[in-house]
Length: 146
Image (cartoon, rainbow, N blue to C red):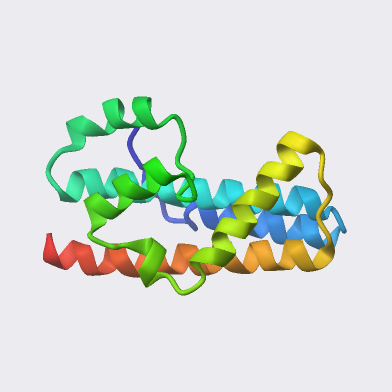
């Protein structure tokens, strides 16, 4: 799957804005789940670009087949991201433990029927926005070094 660049905001930003909208509507659990979707969309686009920057775009499809998802909170996905980017995100991103907590909350909502509070939804949106910014900065740096 390739990333198509158009003259509008990247999809993950549109989805993150939808998470904010869900939170404003007091749909806090939906906001958390939607924020995680934005994080996974950002990670997917980052992995696509990193495979291209590394000169191995042909490896993307088989790796994605093995990984089954693009959640950076999943250890295998994180390891691939770290290997491709050189960014040990679990140590370089100061809010990594917050992101892991957000991902666990999302899983509890989706798989166990948990409900999020306003504070949890706001925290999830904030952490995903920060994670996205971190990945953006890493990619900006890698575009000049790879």
